[in-house]
Image 1 (cartoon, helix red, strand yellow):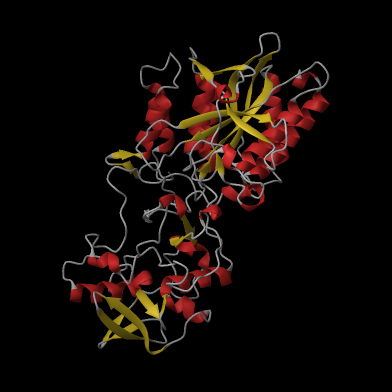
Image 2 (cartoon, rainbow, N blue to C red):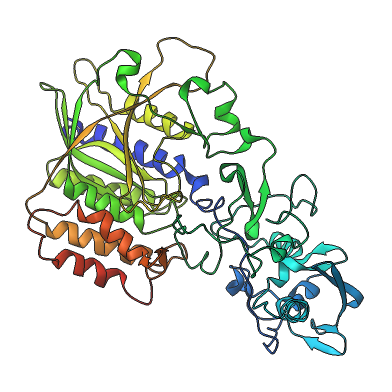
Length: 510
């Protein structure tokens, strides 16, 4: 079949690999944009102020930036009465000194947070913390906006955030995540940061997002997050690329304007059709795929190998092959492609599809996913009487709306449009039902793949911090174990695999 002709197999795999590495390249860095907010800088009054000359590679999260650094790069300048805080109806004014410190009422403070905490405690003795960069203004403009300007000028890329043009505070709905001038300080939330509701889990925590807090707005689905986690409510809901829409509502302009818009898959009976082929998958395949998708806050991609029976029109998905390659690392793509091709061939399997993750979004394909799947189907369909289908599978490990321990899985296939209805979308995404087949044994290949995946991501800033709390007293490691448990083979009822996973992930690096 596919691999019986080596040249054709290599060409198809290479094309699929190239497409996969490009299909969601823009998504690999914006996974948490709609769910994180600015870091709560908890510097103490006596903390030392880092020198502006220090290596700036360590400030990627924003915590290491100082006023001295902003002064050195011309973002702000020293002067009397340049800094202000408006808190609970009172206004306080301070001087910015040449050494980057803040002078107020004869006292010196090493950071905006130190001064903000001091001021807020004077007004409200019960106050325990304060986000200085969001509370202190320089010439009427909040310091967190100036920090973003510094990031842009230094061209520092923050994984997990994208570049958005600075918008003056208070204009176009931009309120830095607040409903008014420090209004959150007048409410029950006494630390100035919106807290996740008790019934909703935390978003996955990585080195980049550790210490940040999730912001919930009145319409969470229409929130866009500016660099540094500052929230900019979108006036136009069509600009929100992660909304889920019905296929019938897709317009011709949607693909170019919002390629990341999610589209709800249709059941075949809704269009008077039957599923074109049946699908079954093994628990070992789902185990590797689910484990892979849990490891990072960025999107991942991999391939599905198995068997296609043209007589029974049945696809057996037997093994998942993760791409241990960054979506943007196209130089490594050919090496990864060849390794996967050889591994599939050695097992006598066929390439039958692909999978990718939606870390914090629903397991519904985006417009871009639909286009990619259609390309794959055309590449793999074969010639003449030879027909080879292609399956797509989406794994969504983190549901941010409810504490769902098991990952959401969606298998889909694209049915070509019979007639052009004015849409640029080339086909309808259809839900493919599939059955699980429990494996009897856990293979050494599975254990090695899990270890290789952890080794690949362990030094990455976007690897999930599994020791952090996911929901109430459960950690992200607890959540992962619960999601994988139903996918264990029958010989793993004694807890050995759970212990193996625990040992792989329960380390200082993760």
